[in-house]
Length: 128
Image (cartoon, rainbow, N blue to C red; front, side, top):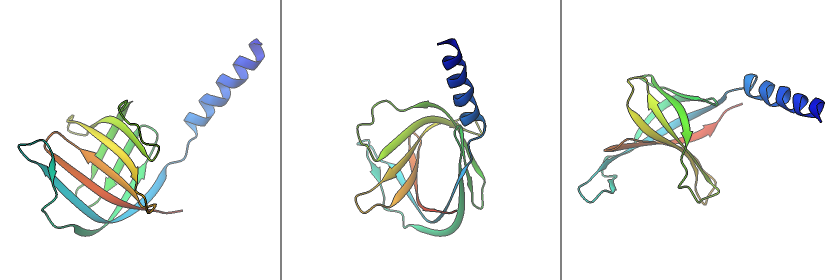
């Protein structure tokens, strides 16, 4: 039993240590601004840009004109959708935010970064 537990522990540690990052490209970004009723207004036009996104187990980097870096520290517990994963995070300036990976009914994947008053949504095109 002890050998089995040690083997499992070594296996899990090696999976976490040697996990490979996932790279995605995004060519469209939408920005929403929170209104007085607490919902986001998506009145701003979508911005077309060439963005590289690197997703790792504890960090997400968005390489655009301005480098954005998010450090994941906790799962979001209120999710009840199988096509959504969410984390509490903070950016490189120390501001808290929420990060979501979403998949819509058509199968498109999105990265959403939500602060208290503004939200970004990037469409994701997975690269190899």
